[in-house]
Image (cartoon, rainbow, N blue to C red; front, top):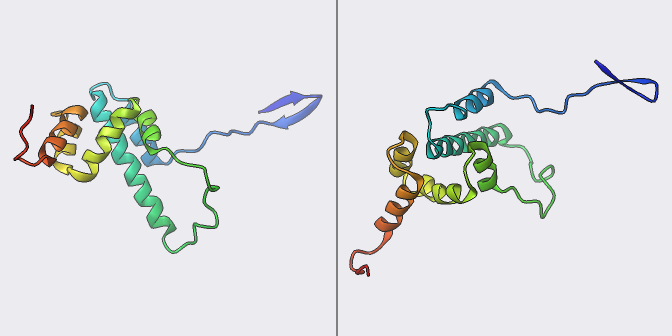
Length: 135
């Protein structure tokens, strides 16, 4: 296929990134209707960190400091995962510490037994010393 511009035939170039089979499967899983939003967030977080782990294994032994993004350019992980799951950035901000610190509560979010907020609140309550009296 080509475009006509100023009488010249210019080939059309697709700028869309090709997805691997695993990425296509992940995308289709996130679009399922039977998952609630917090399950989609937990699934997106797993996909993100599994992809990071695979990239780390693939780049192991290579000098990535020479080809990394420019200084000052930040990757917003919360925003990236939130867009992938279709949830708010704040929800991912509460789910991330649960994922890192309490895998048991993260699994409850993933299974749909707990909401993100319930898991986060439970994690924080478990961190409080028992001798502090709540008002």
